[in-house]
Image (cartoon, rainbow, N blue to C red):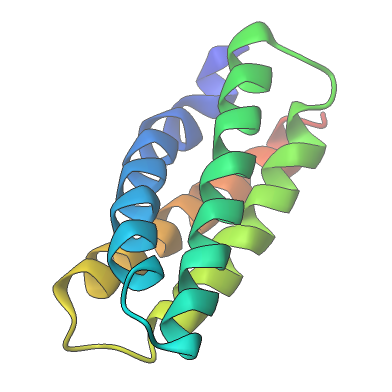
Length: 112
C-alpha cells in the first residue's frame, strides 16, 4: 500500500519545509504580492501535512487529498515563479513542482 505513495511521501516533507521557509520570507516582506505567496505557501504546507498523515494511515481519502495537494502545489509553484531570482521562492517552486507531480501520480494509482 505504501509503495503507491512512496514518491509522494518522499517529496511532501521537502515541499512542506520549503513552503514554510518561503512563507516566513514572503510573509514578512511588506509586499502585498509576496504576502499572497506566503498565504499560498501555508495552504500548500497545511494540505501537505494532511495528505502525509492520510497516506501513512492508508486512508481511503488519501488519493483525493493527494489530488488536492497537487492543485495547491501547482498554484503555489506558479506564484513562486514570479520571483525566479529569489532563492527561497526558487527552492519552494522546485519542491512544489516535484511534489505536485508525485501527488498527481499517487492520486490516480491510490484510487485503484
